[in-house]
Amino acid sequence: MSTASSTFSKGLEGVVAAQTEMSFINGTEGILEYVGISIGDLASKSTFEETVFLLWNKRLPTQPELDAFTKELRSDYAMCDALKARIRALPKDAQPMHALRTIVSSMAMDDPNPNENSVEAARHKALRILAGAPAVVAAFDRHRRGLDIVEPDQSLSFSANFLWMLNGEKPTDAMVRAFDICMITHADHGLNNSTFTARVIISTLSDMYSAMTGAIGSLRGPLHGGANEGVMKMLNEIPSLDQVEPYIMDKIKNKDRIMGFGHRVYKAKDPRAAELMTLAKQLADDTGNMDLYEKSHAIEQIMEREYASKGIYPNVDFYSATTYHCIGLQLDLFTPMFALSRIAGWAGHVIEQLSDNRLYRPTTDYVGPHNVAYTAIEDR
Ligand code: SDX
Image 1 (cartoon, rainbow, N blue to C red):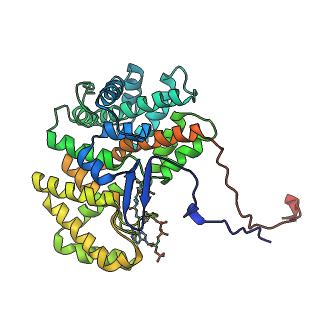
Image 2: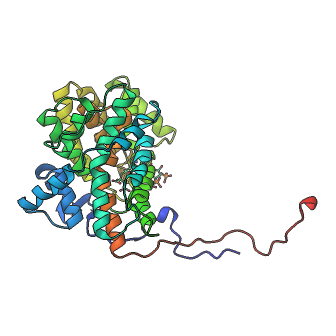
Image 3: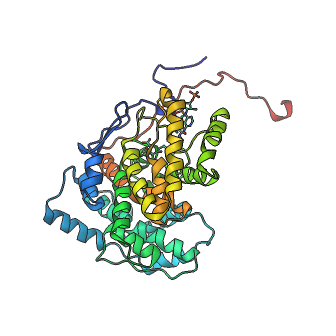
């Protein structure tokens, strides 16, 4: 006897589970806005710091407000010695996403009031994690390469400081701008799986660190943020441009998922993919990686021919792979880059949830048996 109800939606597809003032997505027309401003305008005109202020305050800052926010963010760049010691204690062969999740979780132990959930306290914790996460990723990568940790430089922007700490040399303006566009375009995106995870966790009045830890765990999955690494592996597997067609057609024949394509909400091209495609082409041209861009473009054309009728188009991960490669990032740092940016969105949603909380507790359709007798073990 099933107690099936009409409200069951596998994967919660189409279910409205929260209200937000941060990002608006029109999946049919391929529209994304942060607080009403198009992602195209923000990618071309804004900075990541300004975008974070917009998401958290629901409006663009004045210049004095942006200066004050930037100063506050930069004051949290530095890692305490205890945190650096924990990073140095990590196995050098740990996966960067596991390292990031572990260290962000441990940041609760450096906070005298880790469980305080006032909106002001949550915002301060969010800033600490947003500012500290780049240092964690950079420090772990240098640790695993046997290099000294590079201390943050408070004179540098969020993006420039990350590239400085990672490479130990001041990045070019072009690379900083490219990285900043990646951070802007990945910052928030409605109730995606990792954001929903963060809201579910904080809805028990847990804490910001637990919410962020859960969200990082969700993002690592190849169906979500992990797809950008899958795209790069696919591009590396295709030996040359003339092998793209047979490679992709073979995957389609085997009903394999093509990483970087498809989306639960977008049934048109993800507007972030359009922004990142332009960026990837420019960077590929500047860095001698046009083969990657040309293979990507060829894949997109084949997928358009084969799958557009099913509403399967490139998503944010497809061209971010080439972009991150051209910036000089190692493949297993691609998904951590997604996390560095999405911490902004996760934090904004945690604060929204705290501001009007109700414990998440969906129900199930019980489809198992009833009135079953208990059989003694000797009789089974
Ligand atoms: C992100 O939610 C967000 O907003 C996420 C995100 C964000 O900013 O937070 O946008 C970031 O996670 C982008 C998605 C990155 N993931 C990938 O690129 C992995 C590959 N994509 C797919 O696995 C898939 O498209 C999902 C997981 C993204 C969405 O899957 P759905 O909505 O659950 O759709 P589905 O699996 O039910 O597929 C519907 C049909 C199926 O065919 P049929 O069985 O009906 O014949 O479309 C097919 C699927 O086989 N399909 C694909 C495909 N994606 C869907 N076929 C080939 N390649 C693909 N990529």
